[in-house]
Amino acid sequence: MTVSGELPQPRTPAGVAGLRALVEHPGEAMLAFDFDGVLSPIVDDPERAFAHPAVVPALSRLAPHFRALAIVTGRPAEVVVRLGGFAGVPELAGLLVVGHYGEERWDARTGEITAPSVDPGVEEVRRGLPELLSRLGAPPGTAIEDKGRAVAVHFRRAADPAAAGALLTEPLTELASAHGLSVQPGRMVLELKPAGMHKGTALRSLVAEVGVRAVSYTGDDLGDLPAYDAVEELRSEGLDGLLVCSGSTEVTALAERADIVVDGPAGVVAFLSALAARFGS
Image (cartoon, rainbow, N blue to C red; front, top):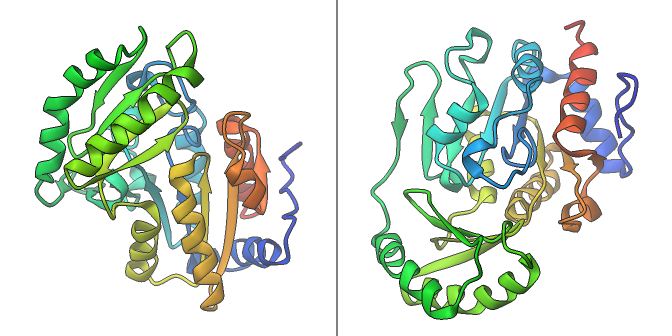
């Protein structure tokens, strides 16, 4: 964890090399992040998941030094930009925000979002979910989040989230499969989304587009594992990479693979601030 403004020591040789590349050659590197649970806290109401108040200042301090800063999220790009407070910040004019696992792209300079057409299976699932949840007897506190290009079912507010997840996982997986979609499990949520949409593909596309020699990715949830896979693949291809986990007790799979584990969004901000201090920012 980061303490007293000090950079943490990665626990793997590959991580040591990745952090060194970020510090010594930031102009050839990209910092990439998930949003929920990384730059913003996990809360009961997804619409209240505002970025940690120190996120924009920390990213603004880092932006002049790095080739690129990117956010790769399963949320709609517009929602993340709004909750993050990223629009209209001069220092973040080059920020890359890709939503829906890479399906959407927000242009910080114009405020425009580009995206392909919505998968028709998403509309079918959107129509069928309320009746299915009613028939299953989904417990109070179960909520549908319409993400536009995907649909998520949250059960964090249920009296017994674990039981709710056990009840819902198989039927929602069957519903998704029937319409050519896949299910992405997360922290007390199941997301039904087009198959093939994942953060690994999105991250690799950004790395190729920006043309960096080093990349760091910070995640917290199961949907970030493909991005971890992508970083490890890029390492095998000669790039330097750093895996950072915004740790929690709800998901441990990333912490087990990460080079550095910090304590939630506050820990992420501390890490970014310590990194910025290396450049006198």
